[in-house]
Image (cartoon, rainbow, N blue to C red):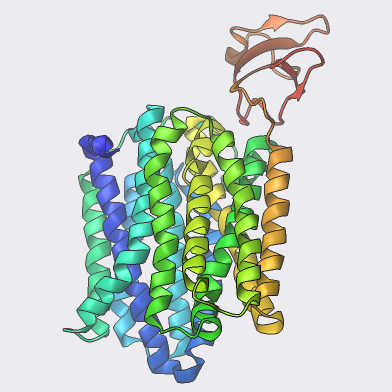
Length: 460
């Protein structure tokens, strides 16, 4: 899997991602300490609001960033976002009011919402071979998991020798290093965007692409299944460990570590597995495994804790991490095959925005239901959502899902370049087949023609 690091451009971009993630992790710990310093016992409410602001920024900003990526050189955009994050982190030690924390979080996450989809859209152009791109997706998943495990430990180590405010210095260094690495990378020149639409049309194109492409609608349903299972881990672990099992605060990290370990092991196995089977075959069973684990979690939290309970919880969290990784890691491949190269920034921006809207739903739901009805009911509610989402994805994603589809055009003039390999039909329209994606010439998904697979017909 490490063979992709031989590509100098990808090596620099991946390293930029890693150091930026470490900076983000340090900032998360430092912001928590800052919130406690300012708000005291109300720090949880402050952080809960900050988390909501983060998700709103992701959902709202990412589509705008996808439109900007087609107008601004990607390297300039990514470097600007890194410098913006570094500037905000540099100002954080001087924050003295709660509203200033909210403003800082908004600016930090808005910059991240612009940087991440642009980064994701650049990787398939740097690594066009599917095998290399699959390995890159697994490495990206590993980077996120390692950050969640490594950053809190690094922060704890640093806090033994420095004050909390100095953590923000580490954040600044991480973002500046990321910017320097992006500058040093020689990025491929993106293909020109054919679409002559205005800025608004480009901003909403990614969402339209999702609603019009069956496998992308299925991917969104799968994202909701992952968000339902992940929410109980990220929101309720502290309550499960300390209130239900009466274990120490240190065991909260152990439980989260079990989730991360399950995710990392699965990410390491993905390149070899996806070389043998297709994305759908991997992602759908993994999604159906999540509600099963949540049902077991409901039984576990409803029962009186025993000697077997703690190992069972660690196994459940590891399985949630594994199932989530099996869904999320191939997701980039699904997006890549569903969009033309010039539209990749918009497609990845839509993926970033829509997937985080799922978390925006499940995060507060996990907290509110747990507070009002208890942990077992929370696991059941989230399990039902995960099961419904996995079932919906199965129905939305055709079992036979070829890249090349036969279809007809009725609105393109004779001699149009796109019709170079097309032939006339009996109704006077033009018919041909090619790798089908939604773009300026294809506005809706073809409906399978009777008796012809994968033939399709669509009016565009």
